[in-house]
Length: 239
Length: 126
Image (cartoon, rainbow over all chains, first blue to last red; front, top):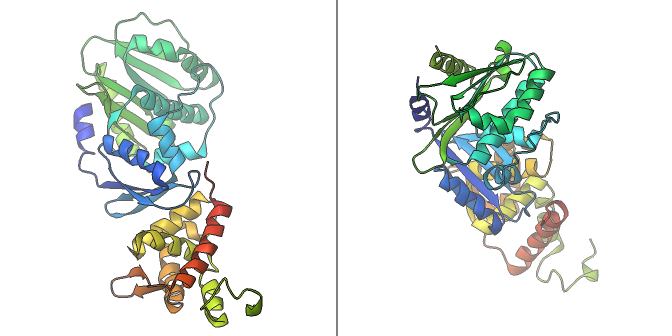
């Protein structure tokens, strides 16, 4: 399975999002449309704080999420610090991630990918065991994430594997295995997959591919079978 | 209710009519439905359920109104018929579509005053 064939599976999925709120919330509709997600705006005097979105999948109600959570992700993703602070869990952010899982975004920025990655790394931290496989395209990109990963490795029993083009000599960090790649299989791929030590409830993965125009086309999922498939595909890259 | 104290505010509305309107909007989901239809005139029960569930959850209501199927049932069997009986909307049972009724200015004013107070209290402009 290549990343492209994986992403293609989500191309036909029927996802429609309606934004309910005052006129200022139309900005979020524009942002969603830019991601090639079917989005419409319905005026409602909710005030900004109580504006909300309703997500339909295959024509039926799937979830509702506060607009502010969607807005934060699309307009100003909170990357947080990359230092060694203890990861927290924000219910609004988690609800957003689960509501928009299995939804293909066609224009994700590195900041949005990083925010999603951090969310999943925090989940791995909380679970505390299992295998986490990540690829940030090139190993050198890992440098900016080093603090977070040192905390992940030292505070937990996680088995962490970092993949990427061999453009940097990684240091030795207990609990982290580096996989310098010389072929181009993951060259344009941003990927994170966590098997939660076999606990299907906590498995998660993010897969994105850099497009020719610059932004990433990507999707995240909590589907355990899909996460297993992604884990297997990553392992195969370095065999 | 003492009509003699506020004759000018509700000119043209009988005491019974006023009671009916206030009862019609005595439940939060019905105020939400009226507010939505005042903006959009007509909507399917599915759309109104989306609005009630989404808005209730946005307001932090941890109640049955946050469950979509239960809310749809409550709208169909209770809230929409109550609004229809009060002649605030017409609810087409076959099409399962609600449409705002043609309201007199004084009726619209009473209903808007109630829903405005509700949104001013619970929804905040940042």
